[in-house]
Length: 133
Image (cartoon, rainbow, N blue to C red; front, side, top):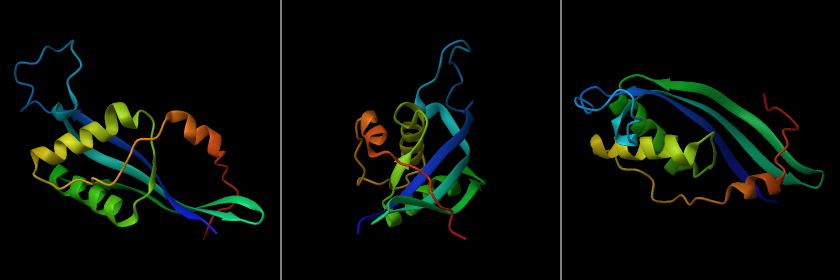
């Protein structure tokens, strides 16, 4: 039997005016220039059984507070659970922001993740079947 933890995550961030003093208003800033306000997360457990792939939602919530507390909590969770990360634009925005802002605060980040081709998630056929209570 194969089991996996899924983490669906999305960050909310604003432009960090301290970093962007001279940045043009009409130009999109790089990841290091976004200050993280919150990270929404849904944690699910995925299990392959004789009946097929089953996904159970374990917990959902939002990490809020000062950025130097939010980002360490995210990376500690990530390192402990080593989940499959599911995001919208995670490669282009969420992960680069989380990693670069961690560097700004000297927060260690996970070196243990790898990026899979986008098509892999489509081929696995993830289907929510049940919800854990």
